[in-house]
Image (tube, rainbow, N blue to C red; front, side, top):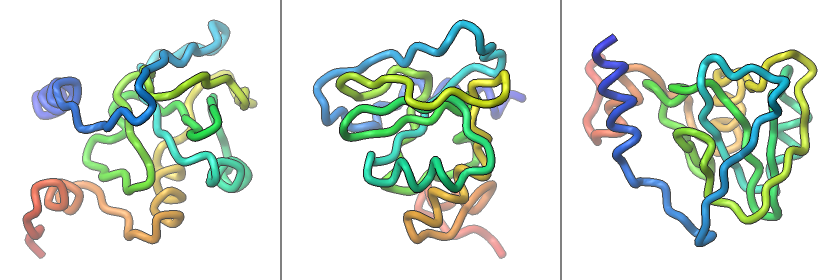
Amino acid sequence: MLRTALHRLSRGLRGDLPDHTGGRVELALPAALPASLGCDAVGVPARHGFRLLARLPRTGCVFADTDWWWWIVPSGSDLDLKWPAPARYVVGTNVPAEHPRLIHWPDSPSPYTPPIPFYLMVCQLAGTTPAWGREARAQDTGTVAAQ
């Protein structure tokens, strides 16, 4: 529990997301969809948006502008995961975007895209091997995980 709290605190202090658009926009979730787990957002370049949306078995709220598509995931969906480029993981829903609009309303009463299937699809898109737990932490620090 302490590790999770420290991880979330450090995520909020890092400024490792480049702001290429010059502005940030808060993604407004529909009031009818409870976000009891908190919300983070995962962005992918727009050119990959339709492919991911069509192949995910279940999708939550998706926002899009001309350059990026943003999926809503539960808070902490980056804990022990290394989201590969070209994906951008944003803590909260304040994203670097111009004029994102809600383009997908979920079929379920939840705003979330399940993060693990989404992560696996983003890894496939990026051509990387999924890494979580000790392996992902080792990639973040540049060390090799013990076998």
